[in-house]
Amino acid sequence: MVLSTEKAPLRNILSTTSIACKIVDVSALNSTTHQVELESTTKVIPHYIAGQYLQLQLDLNNDGRIHSFCYSIANSSNSKQSRRLMLFILNTSNLADRIVTYLIGLQRTMAIVNVKLPMGQAYLQTNLSLPHLLIATGSGISKIKCISEEILRQNPDAEVHVYWSNRKLEDFYLINEFNTQTGRHKNFTFHPILESPHSKWPGRSGFLFEVIRKDFERFDNFQTYLCGSPAMVYSTIDKLIDKGLKEDNCYSDVFEYAPRKSRSNLNF
Ligand SMILES: Cc1cc2nc3c(=O)[nH]c(=O)nc-3n(C[C@H](O)[C@H](O)[C@H](O)COP(=O)(O)OP(=O)(O)OC[C@H]3O[C@@H](n4cnc5c(N)ncnc54)[C@H](O)[C@@H]3O)c2cc1C
Image (cartoon, rainbow, N blue to C red; front, side, top):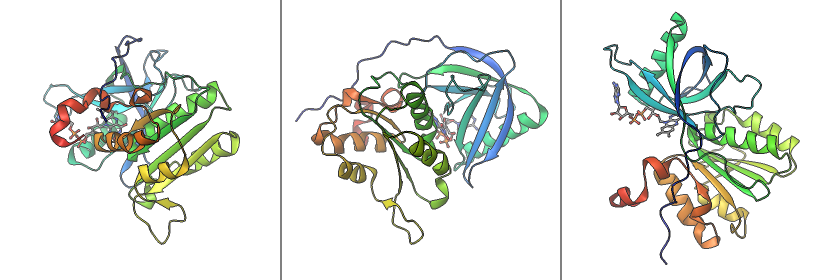
């Protein structure tokens, strides 16, 4: 069977702009993830759509050279605090750790950081009367949180299924927020998945695609947003295709920054 591996390019409907922000909060969500809140120094944040990302422009090495780092925006532009942008930064590498330390320094000195937004084509753009499958690993939950909140804001009865996989128990830092949504919305389900079984984990474990496959007979009409590594995104799609999932109904930033054809040698 020949599968479509490329999506048609979408129209970039919002122009990208740079704004000056202050870092108003950097707090640990767990031992490896920080929540960062930025506030625009002007009255408003440019409009963005749930699922888009931004670029922090940082003089990280203090040598006058600006480096750009991408982060999904975790809060909807329709949230109450419309001047604020929320990010979740996973600091499991030296570089990410330096970025978090740098941002803490900016917060302390109340320095300005330039932020470019909105970016990305994998934003919320689907018919909300169709079922939605939202899939994340690790800090990919940032984008999925934003999209799920926006779907439910627009259509409180939308059918939405969130799957979030993590390696460690402590990584489920948003479990209460999602459980609250489950109580409020009759067609919303939340499935935290631990990669491997653990004696203290009462929930499900295993590969994401295995768990998702068990929950549904078919995926023909499902609109699917995925946020995680290219390997996770492409392998999850591939493992659901035989049950009717269509790649044309899938949305992920990896389609832009790690398209299949340029990664064929990595088996994506
Ligand atoms: C669309 C998109 C959305 C993302 N969203 C998130 C998110 O929500 N949360 C999250 O935690 N991460 C996110 N990331 C990943 C994030 O942008 C960074 O990659 C990460 O924080 C940096 O850590 P890393 O070790 O993974 O760096 P890598 O991704 O491995 O490297 C990033 C780049 O920085 C360069 N670099 C290395 N050292 C330096 C240095 N000293 N100075 C300047 N540049 C250097 C590298 O050459 C490389 O090009 C996203 C990435 C993309 C593309």
